[in-house]
Length: 74
Image (cartoon, rainbow, N blue to C red; front, side):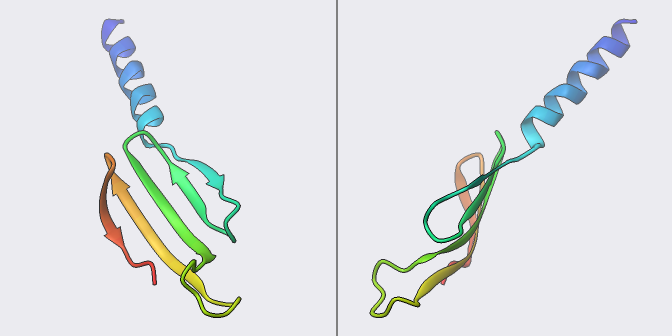
């Protein structure tokens, strides 16, 4: 009985830590998938240093425990 309770608690903990919640930002189309352990950001926003209206930054940013491990935003 105790083993089943511990297993259930571990499964619930894994779900809470790993299931992301999507958030859509109002910056041109960026979507952030945020979980407790990691964050994935699909970037699509207007470049603040752009010379014309149609210049966008696009790419992906991945953070694990708040540390950026991947960034290909161009």
